[in-house]
Amino acid sequence: MTTARLTAITAVLALLTACSGDTPVPPSTPSAPVIEVPGPAVPTQERVAAVLAQMTLAEKIGQMTQLEEGSIDAGDVARLNLGSVLHGGGTAGDGSLETWSSIVHDRQREALTETRLGIPLLYGVDAVHGFGALHGATVFPHQIGLGAANDPDLMQRIGRATAIEVAATGIRWNFSPVLAIPDDVRWGRTYEAYSQDPARVSELGTAYVTGLQGANLTDATSVLATPKHFVGDGQAAYGTSTQHIFRPYVIDQGVAPVNPTQLRDVLLPPYQDAIDAGALSVMATFSSWGSTKVHSQRELLTTTLRGDLGFTGFVVSDWAGCDQIDPADFDGSMVACINAGVDMVMVPHDGDRFQQALTEAVDGGSLSMARVDEAVSRILTVKFDMGLFEDPYGDAALGAPVGTDAHRALAREAVVKSQVLLKNDGALPLPSADATIVVVGNAAHDMGRQAGGWTMDWQGGEGDVIPGTTIVEGIEARGGDQVRVVRELPASGTVDVCIAVVGEAPYAEGVGDSMDLALPGIEILDTFRGRCDSTVLVLVTGRPVLVTDAIATADAVVASWLPGTAGEGVADVLFGDRAFSGTLPVNWPRDISQVPSTPDSRDYLFPLGYGLTQ
Ligand code: BGC
Ligand code: BGC
Image (cartoon, rainbow, N blue to C red):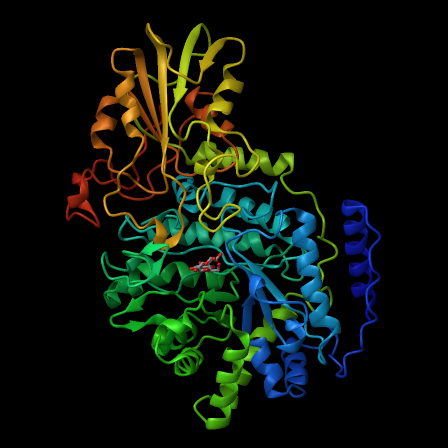
């Protein structure tokens, strides 16, 4: 065993002991790998070749297999020679740093010590707005808010902070950022995207990749980025989805009309820039182009991605994305997927079936050994370039504090910069003294709504799901002794300012596809009639919503997006302590006839780029 590994294990055990109070079980004596891996002084390609030359077919297929944490038991990493494990949208156990670290450590230990080759695992998660599934982590605004902030330097710092909090668990791979351009804001993933403006997507996506991956990929706090979903996830047309999870999807995973000009001029440039910035894994999209699933399109996944864009890393499928190629033919779908250019398959559940399909395909000739070697080489190259062979447990990063004051200050800065002032007839800034302010609405005191999907659970949840400051708490704290902030409209009389904070219930992916962009809860504004000297509407939504009448009624309106844990940031701009600087990252429709788009952008209620400063 290398010294680095020993140090790493010692560090993890120390951490676990400190946190649980139990005496740790000593690590089992690792069986020495039967192959020699050339050291880091040897060029990566030679190291890859040396390992590949000693691998059996089963070991190669293992590297191409990614299984979901919940579908594996102790022993499966070794039995299936797994190259990767992902933890899907939900959280691990109690979500604590200790739980995450010990799960990741156990899987890695098994890969290192119970397989013949001892090739380290690459463990992946969706830390899409900070590590939302890690209890106590800093949860930043979702991407659409950061698109409104449009600040690449901020984006890079958020990438860095996210990487540090992810790496604290020993995880080194994040399925983020989304580089989609959402054509139709009814799409449930609109909030996962930065903007409809490809220039913003390019700049912010690139800055985030740079921050996440850090100065040097081998650093223990460097986390591999995954631009996704290549390509056309935001182009699926309304009514074309056939997916059904919890409810029928409408848009997500549907059919994108083939449009080569849009592909070249709008959709590919953000990927080009992210690749140029060093992105080494890309996730394929569930969408179809024309009638064919992108997961089976070699033209896109290989010719365009590698040939035109110069991508040299590995392609990971989306969650059971290969299965969708032909739901009636699992084996054929896996082969088509890999032949199209997918190198690692997010299976995610039935590893035995997947591996058997690939083994038979190689034996039968429908999948060449050359293609398998190519895929495995790409995966191993990234593992070597990340320094996983030298520091598989990430010992230098492990156990670092998450949700630090510095990261929370960064989240607050991000919230401030992401708020878009849509209207102000003088109601803002809020009075700083001698006033009563009423703050009501379904998102006034609801951390879950504020954080949106991908927070502790795939779909997120309402209420007190994670620690943080709700918007009303931020307003109360700022109001201090000078301003009376109340959470209910008094039974009679008038008050100085009434604020309605109204938000969407959390959702993720196609479960959140909307048919009407309605906002239940907006009717609370009716209760303000005749009772408030001025009214402010704060919208906590993952996308524009159709509340044109409410916007006309309120004296001031703020698009707050899904701000995450730092509700203080909303108070900062409402009270005028910080200036509004966010601008709309997407067009805001006036009515449903303008969705997905209207020919003349001047017709929108507010066009992309709009935002008042006071
Ligand atoms: C999503 C991906 C995500 C993956 C793993 C899929 O359903 O489309 O964006 O990375 O799940 O959670
Ligand atoms: C997982 C997600 C995944 C989704 C798709 C969820 O259980 O947590 O990561 O995208 O399933 O079905």
